Length: 230
Image 1 (cartoon, rainbow, N blue to C red):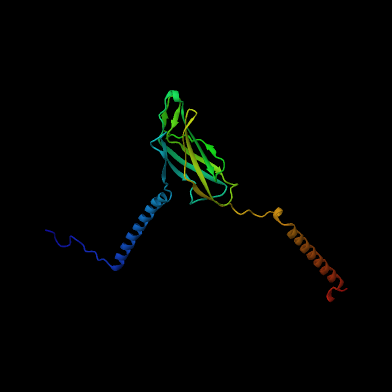
Image 2: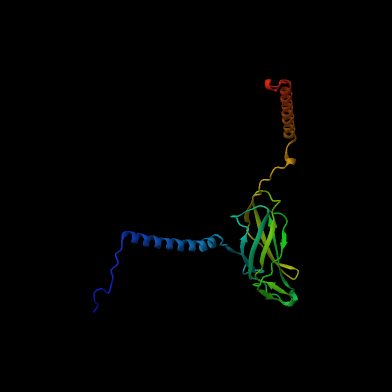
């Protein structure tokens, strides 16, 4: 049996309850901020993987492609990162007599001539070992594209993947256009940019200012103040 005085009753005031509630709210707010810090960027930077090609029929071949850059959320000026990875989901299984299996890759901006690119080597590369060579199943690409000469506004880039068995073109497929935006900074005017008329106007103003200053000095010497006379 408990004796009296074993428990001490602590009085709770309104202020104490308010302080406790504020502390709980502060901790909750910090937890929400931490969650948003990690979740929101992941959602914003999430990329859609698109499937191209044919998984059956004549010369079946297909790939999944994930494009990280460019995108229509970023404005580019002098340079643009071209960054994407592919995974061949269907490809021909070649034999020695048919020749090596190779992939060809390129990009085209605004229907200009295609630019050939090769995949970057990565520790995560997966190969299909053929009798003649090793074919990279999941090529990865990361290139800096010079866009300094492209006009301001929206443009599109198209990626193309081709499979060759020996010298025979087995498969050829282009992606849907990826839209990106170019916005070059406004150039700073230089002295060479000043028009001849503006330059002539500045010269005239300078001449008039010098003539006025000379006239003022002449009049001051010709009509000195009374106190200056000897």
